[in-house]
Length: 202
Image (cartoon, rainbow, N blue to C red; front, side, top):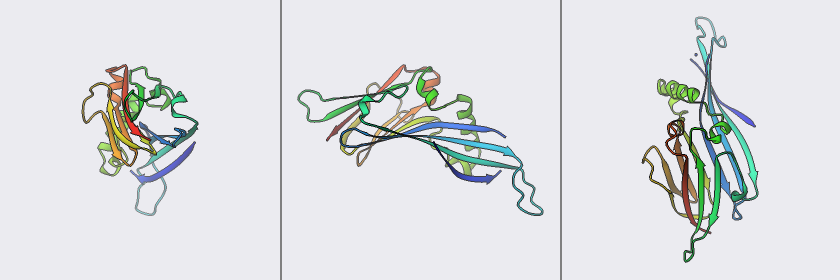
């Protein structure tokens, strides 16, 4: 695991954790790497002396944790709450990857990403109350997947209808697909599973 300190800003003795970001980079044979990113805000009272006439009130740290994994084939990996299936429909010249995510309230994906509801809501509130932290709060209340294919993605969509804006499955071009899943839907147990269909030409 690697820890990258983004900044220390003079400002509060709490710790907030944001939602998870999962990045998957694929090779031609569907081998590749998966990175998991987790953001935290840590606050503590007091801080470093900076000079006469300045009273140190607090320090806030924004930290990003990265976990990096390699795999031989996307369809053979078994991370908690995520499955990938590859197939080709008869008479179609495109290949399809079907991605299933456990989006229930008991999803093991939430545990694997160390997502705690109180911490996520606390970080979102802290960031929204302060403009200087808001830019570090990107999708704090979502789980985001970024998939990078060495192929041309033709389409991406959910297998069932989801609320536009809150749920995102989009093709950003140049082989990049982005999927955003709202955490409140997990916590409210709105959907047991969510399927995403990605069609591409290799």
